Amino acid sequence: MEAPSAPAHRGLSLWKELLLAVSLLSFWSPPTTARITVESINAAEGEDVLLLAHSLPENLVSYSWYRGERVDSKHQIATYIITLARILPGPAHSGRETIYTNGALLFQKVILNDTGHYTLQTITKDTQTEVASGQLRVYKPVGKPSIRARNTTVTEHKDTVELTCLTNDTGISIHWFFRDQRLLLTNRMNLSQDNSTLIIEPVRREDAGGYQCEVSNPISASKSDPHRLDVQTENDYSGYSAGTIAGIVIGVLFVVAMGSSLGCFLYHRRTGRASDPQGLTEHRPPASTPGQGPSGASTSLDPLPGPRTAGPIYEDLLHPSTDVYCRISPRADGAS
Ligand SMILES: *[C@@H]1O[C@H](CO)[C@@H](O)[C@H](O)[C@H]1NC(C)=O
Ligand SMILES: *[C@@H]1O[C@H](CO)[C@@H](O)[C@H](O)[C@H]1NC(C)=O
Ligand SMILES: *[C@@H]1O[C@H](CO)[C@@H](O)[C@H](O)[C@H]1NC(C)=O
Ligand SMILES: *[C@@H]1O[C@H](CO)[C@@H](O)[C@H](O)[C@H]1NC(C)=O
Ligand SMILES: *[C@@H]1O[C@H](CO)[C@@H](O)[C@H](O)[C@H]1NC(C)=O
Image 1 (cartoon, rainbow, N blue to C red):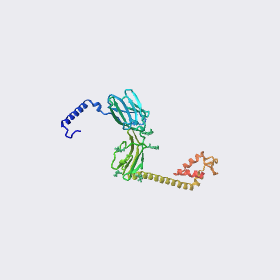
Image 2 (image 1 turned 135 degrees about the vertical axis):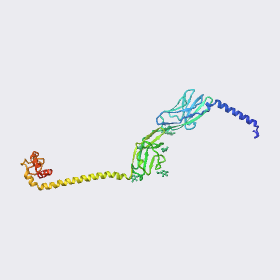
Image 3 (image 1 turned 120 degrees about the horizontal axis):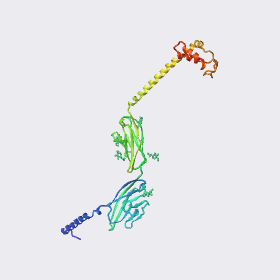
Image 4 (image 1 turned 90 degrees about the horizontal axis):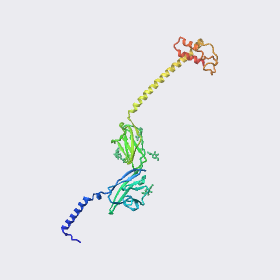
């Protein structure tokens, strides 16, 4: 046991030795100081994936891959013995893993359950070991989301808009688009914690347009169909009813016109009937065969003006009266 008052020169020489060792190390040891690394990777379910190792030392004897963040023989996937060019499967080998000569681990047709940490251990000829871990994340491609809205037509300054992005996917990010651009949040807008619900309160006219939500994960993204939001101002109602009023006015005018012409018709019909005796007797055509006319089914036994009795009708029209149309009516009327 050394005394606390150890000679100062001994400490100094130790320090010199250390300095020498460090300088020697830094001079020729870069290959060994470059730590090995394993590249983390995101993959889509069903793909073949390579977990790559970088900065591997030289003079390697073997590579061993383990499931998890540690070297644990229970979770050994496989060991590749370089000198023998042989792969020895471990207890964690699923039958889909292969180790390449460059140390990379190949997964064939990754499944979601392959997600996790993987650890590589290298051993050199002088039995130096190095360890590095990386992560493999396996995702399902996201499906197309849809938008659910409380109201599609809302009134400016009054209503609240609530749009919800519907998706069955998990582990996703949600972003909103307005008129095909990333939605810029105004101080009237709020997003729920997970961005799935967009609230606009109060809504304004400039908020009208197509909204889309996009769900994404590291390997895929999908946008909903646009959801159209219509924003009405209170004035829209009068603007809208102006057209309706015009329509109603036209309708009323039409009805009035119809009514007056009907009145004329009825009036003349009545007056025509009153003048029937003379008109009919004066211009009655020669009796034609009953049942020949268009109203042949009529039970009337009166001679009917058939289609071939155009002559007398012509006479009627020649009658010195301006009520030409009204003249014909009593005739047909009297015929039935
Ligand atoms: C997923 O992995 C765990 C262990 O990590 C295992 O217990 C489970 O059976 C696996 N599931 C499937 C579907 O492979
Ligand atoms: C939906 O629209 C109706 C009618 O315009 C309105 O009364 C209601 O408040 C609106 N709902 C929301 C959530 O804005
Ligand atoms: C979610 O799943 C249900 C049932 O599996 C389906 O009816 C619905 O369309 C899905 N929704 C989306 C947004 O994929
Ligand atoms: C929510 O949206 C904002 C703005 O678009 C974005 O910065 C953020 O990453 C999103 N968060 C999630 C969890 O999707
Ligand atoms: C948005 O959320 C914040 C915090 O939750 C709240 O203070 C604010 O009033 C909300 N704004 C709207 C427009 O809902």
